[in-house]
Length: 202
Image 1 (cartoon, helix red, strand yellow):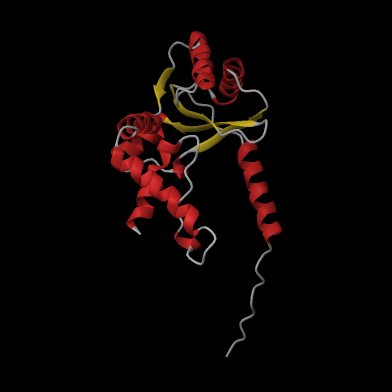
Image 2 (cartoon, helix red, strand yellow):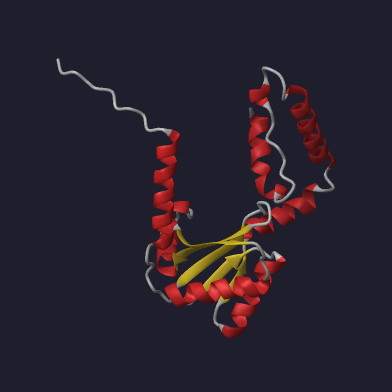
């Protein structure tokens, strides 16, 4: 009988280093220059004084194939085109980042983004120079805004949110901590309603 030797488990720091190396490679990897890019633009919630502008991309050709197969878009279908850490994020800077990216990968056919003032202004400035580019409002944010409008006056939902908060306070320091409802974010709360609903199913 052959002897099986245990493979040592890599440490946290080794896994982290390799993840960072892969991420750096992905960011620096040369992208295909195309005329049919669809950009998805968003910013992170502020971390201290910094904000992160992220631009993902998918070619119209790839997106059309996904639509034909009648499957949903997956994060694996997207490419990270750029990540910009910015201490100051405004429309002029967003436009500048879009121009710089376009020089490297090509002018997009379409830009999908929310209507946050900085991003909206930046895309509109970019469109002034590239009027053929279509700016589409991100459906996720649009649906979240519709839900927010609908649920803000719904007594049942407001009671549910209040009950979740009370439950958090009552069990957070007990052996039932694993049952704690998810913390409601101050920003983009309506984008994450499914977390509360899933918790309710338990």
